[in-house]
Image (tube, rainbow, N blue to C red; front, side):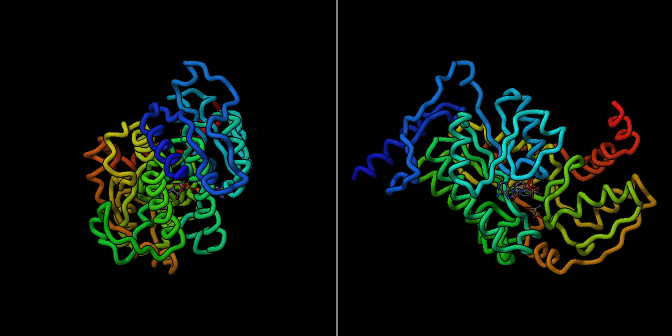
Length: 373
Ligand SMILES: NC(=O)C1=CN([C@@H]2O[C@H](COP(=O)(O)OP(=O)(O)OC[C@H]3O[C@@H](n4cnc5c(N)ncnc54)[C@H](O)[C@@H]3O)[C@@H](O)[C@H]2O)C=CC1
Ligand SMILES: CC(=O)[C@H](N)C(=O)O
């Protein structure tokens, strides 16, 4: 009975929480006899009113394709020092000097908890993961990072009353899911460790939400395309590489078949969606995991669009069997009507806009001028 009372109290506290998610709740790991227990009212600093206005954000796995861009966006909104990037890799100079950075291995529960406590974190954005292709190449590591790491994140978020964002992916669906289009709720039987771990994250996050009142928010991202950051080993990476090769060598060898259609999105739309769902009023969220989408195309269609700007571009195909099998099991089109209806999701970049923007950004003259500035 005391456990039930604690949980009921926890849920009530969370429901009463302010927008920044600055409430403190009882440790989930402490529900048993965990030595990791901290008291629910542990408070090491007094928080002034103006500081409490903004969330204090920690981004895990922040040195990958998406983290640095998200930190930049959030720092503009909440102030440089309110957003901490973390990773297990060494940050390049430009990242290190642009705002707070901290080493954090998500497999180290105590270290993670210390960072959250010492920095009075209120929003946790959990980007650490091994993506689809690298995950298949090292299943034990993918299982550890994507599943054990997530357990640490969930417990710390619940224990400290954080608002938790964990991205999922089109890869959370499999060959038995409806593929054209794929709705939010349908069969999910992915055949990659990456997909399995993301379905696990969706379900565990939702379970912690309903069981412990955790403010869990999750978007299923399509393949993300960015100019100033490199993808980390996924199946959709070709859609970034084509731009670099088109400009550098005028020749691109694609590792997927020409007609492999997948949902895709420009990074600015992805990061904006992330901020929007994080800021959405609780009552607008009828679900905790949403599909979001912008466009769908095949390598052939993308190449044709790039060739409108760079007609000399030559494209050849050398199919990678692992990536092709993964892509063939993923959605071709993504149904994101619930996100549009509930919290007003609207993409800004379609295929022509994406290609113009990517080529404009990677224009050698622009990059040279930027390097000199
Ligand atoms: N980029 C994309 O196209 C998509 C990304 N996502 C999700 O968005 C999130 C971010 O994606 P990206 O930035 O593209 O990933 P990425 O692979 O580029 O970066 C992941 C980061 O996690 C870090 N990491 C690995 N092990 C770690 C550990 N033990 N502790 C702390 N950090 C660790 C890596 O050092 C890396 O910097 C991931 O969860 C991914 O699944 C979802 C769908 C599409
Ligand atoms: C779509 C994703 O989740 C990622 N880019 C991958 O291809 O693994």
